[in-house]
Amino acid sequence: MQEHFHFTIDQAKIQKQYAAILFFVSEQLPCIQMYLQRRNCHLLKQEDEVIIAIHILGKLLGFTSERAWHRFVIGNLFTKEMFPERSRYNRRCRSLRWAIKWIRHQLAKRGQHHAYAVVDSLPIELCHHARIYRVKRFQGIADIGYCASKKMAYYGLKLHLQITDQALPMGYVVTEASCHDRTAAETVMVQLPHPYTLGDKGYVSQDLQKKLYDEYKITFWTPVRKNQKIHQSKAWKRWMKRKRKVIETVFSVLIDQYRITEIRSNSVSGFESSLDGILLAYSLVILGLVER
Image (cartoon, rainbow, N blue to C red; front, side, top):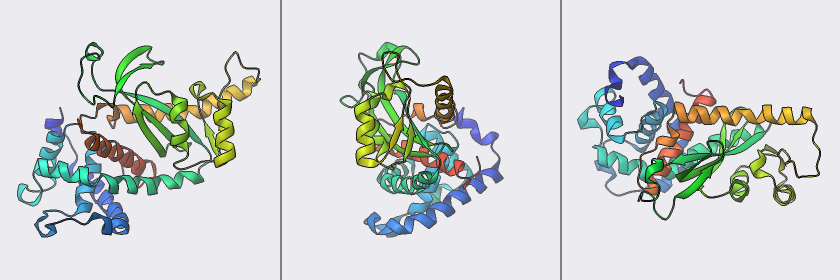
C-alpha cells in the first residue's frame, strides 16, 4: 500500500510539512554541529538537516518500509541526482540518530512545565506468536514476556514511556519483554523528572515511591492493591483512572498512525533511529510545530 501512496497524497501538504520540519531542525542543529564532523563533506548531496527532516517526515506519514519511503522521496521531493541512494541515506540516518535524540530531548524539556506526567509500558512484538521459540531477530536483546492487557506471551521488546498530561513524550527506555515495569520506572522518570507522576498498579512499590521522593523530589502516585492496608476513596480512584487515560490514547495514536510497533529494523542503531524519529515527529505535532 505504501508503494502507491503518491497517488493519493496532497503534494502541497507534504511540502508544507517538510518545510516546517526543516525549519525547526535547521534552528536546532547548529547547537551540536561541531559533534557531527565527518570526512568527504564536499561529496554530500544533501546537508544533515535535510536528511533528518526527511527521516522525520517519513515517520510522520507512517512509512515502515525504508525502500518504499526512499522511492517516495525520489518521486515527490527530490530528483535521483540530488538525493543519496537508499543504502547511503539509511546509513546517514543511523549515524545522525544522536542528533535526532538530542533534538527530541530538547522538545521534551517543555513537558516539565505541564501539570503532571504519566508513565506506562507498551509491548513491541517482533514476530508472530508461532515463531517465538525459533526467531533470531534481536537475539540476546529481546526475549519472551507476558502482556497482561492482551493476556498473551510474546517475543520482543517493551517500551517504557513517560508523557505529560498534554500528551508530550518525555523520557523513555526500551527493555527486553520480560522486564517488570517497576524495574525500569526509575530510569524512565529521572531522565526528565516531573514533580507529579502517575502510574498504574504495575508500579506499586512503597520503596520505589520513597526513593523517588527522597532523591529526586518526584511524587509518584499509583492505585493500591486489594491486599494493601492503604485506603483510597472511590473519588480518588476515579480521578486517577481519568488522569491516566491520556497515555492509553497516546499509545493508540502511536500504534495506529505512526506504526511504532511495526519498526522493521534488524539492527539496534536502526531501531533506535526509527523510534526516536517517531517520537520526535509525534512531539512536533503535539506542540503544534507541524501539521498532521
